[in-house]
Image (cartoon, rainbow, N blue to C red; front, side):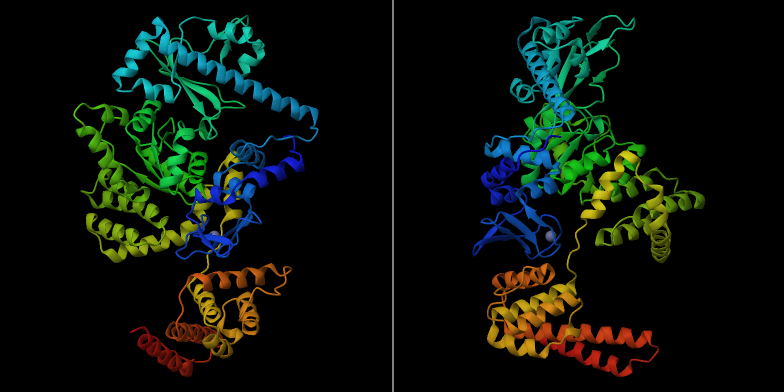
Length: 596
Ligand SMILES: [Zn+2]
């Protein structure tokens, strides 16, 4: 990939509105010269994410992510550096210049650009042919019969390929493309005898498949006649098109997904179009029954959860469970129970609107994927015999052990005990030991194939560390001291380094004790850890309320956490911490009184 000149990358940064870009992912509020909000990279309830519009930088004091607007687009929208630069350049109208590039790379880039242009032209031809050609009447009838309007079809650029053998070949050549290029674009096939070429898509309804930026990557084509085999033909896997990485409709669903945080995942092309036509503008299709890890990763760049409205068989469900864990980044997968044998397009086209309502209801009551999986295992299991119940137990324990601790998980375990007529403590024990044993073996068993490995390595590298409750309390107390410096000084003097769970937090306390009036002044830029903590405290102090009572309560809680550390130390030395236990009990009582 040719490098952009440093000048043009700078111009992209200059022209980009970092607040606007980030606002698509989290609500930002002005706070002095900065903007703050909830971090879009980790789960949190109080804002520790800060954007500096003058410096055009963002930083999270909770998980430590940070960078410039290009970095943000790379991380949050799942684009490579060159793609992020190009996307921002497109959006803010900046002309990019490239460094003199290595001739071979330049050739590849130009070749790809020509193929994309050829696909775009061809898509335009198919669209016009569907709209105007008498030979496309059958295709128009079929699509109208599925309840799809001409506007919706035009929006997605749906087209029709003529029944001739060489229309696309000849049109491509007339437009100046070589036979090799037309073949590389996946539009023609070499004939069996090795002489001559013919069009790949003939007498088919054609759906252009685009990437998130709206560029045609390939086509999906559906047979028009019942005797035509196979029913669906896709562009070949190649430089531009990869089925595993493709989500049909992503370019149109992206804005709504970012807005609502949800993606609706359906199976087929016409399902997507029918959903958008019905106002469900977050719909995309996976073109199969099992979502791939690549698709999960792509979706997680835009949405927090995906509702799967698929006709998933058992193999499909198991693939989905794997995809969810390999994906790394958090994407909550939920499953809508679809009425047997009907797809979303059928349901939405249903005359009286009742089936459309049933579809919407199925989406609203979608279950978390593991819960859905457990329910299906129980429904399918032979629960009439002890051996059958044992088998079902083995299977559901595996799934429950992979879930995070939650109320949903607790309820599910109770339900399983109930349905298997077993003691709840048996389920709890089995899940606990499966979690321990499976922790390593499951991960090994699910080691992703080579082509997925970089995605999961990336996820491991990204995994931001959120502050725990104790750390939040420590920083919260320091923030209150800064907000109310008169009372704060006294509290700061009562604290010691042992009250803090991390050395860096203790260093922040020592600094703030001596600079409580203006903690940021004079702080060295060479100590990013201290800078991070102190800036975090300063930001909190501007946003969160403070009172002498709340300070006293936090102080007691920090004191108790310190005693807990001392108890743990005493126990590991083998000395009975009786005196410390008494002190702890006193503190607990004082905390309870302070809370009431
Ligand atoms: Zn964060």
